[in-house]
Length: 155
Image 1 (cartoon, rainbow, N blue to C red):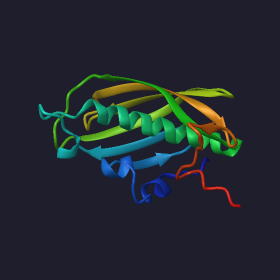
Image 2 (tube, rainbow, N blue to C red):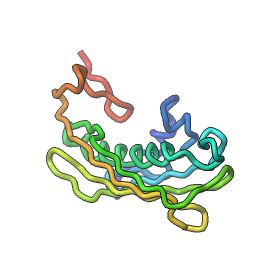
Image 3 (spheres, rainbow, N blue to C red):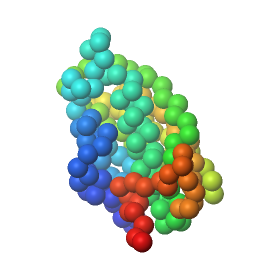
Image 4 (cartoon, rainbow, N blue to C red):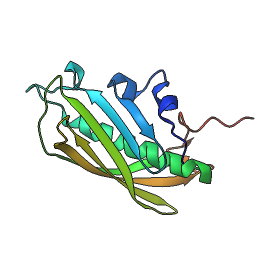
C-alpha cells in the first residue's frame, strides 16, 4: 500500500490550502482526496462558491498527486493547463469532497482528472489538469522548483 502524505500536507503552516481551510484526507501518487466546509471566504458576490475555489482545489489535488508520483523519479511538477467545469452552485455551510486520480503519467507530462461533490454525492465541479514534469536540475522562470514535498538541496 502506498504511503499516505495527508498528515504531512495538512501540517504545512501556510499556503493556499490552509488559507481556504481545505483538509487533505488522503494523498498518494494514485489518488488524492480532500474536503472543506464552504465558508464566507469561498463565496463570490452572489453568495455561491467562487469558481476559482473549485479550480484551485482541483489543481491542488492534481498537483499533489503528480508530485508524489514524480518525486521518486527526481522530478518536480508544474501545472500547464486547468480545465474546470462548474456543474452545481453551492452556498455557505455546504460540505464538499474532492477526488483526483491520474489519467496518464508520461515521462514529461501527467494528466489528472478530478471531481468535487456535495454531501449528497451530487457533482459540483469537474476538472482536468495537465502538468509538466521537470528534472531536478531544470529551471523554471530562472529559479529551481522547490516545494513542501521537495526539500531544498544541501550544499
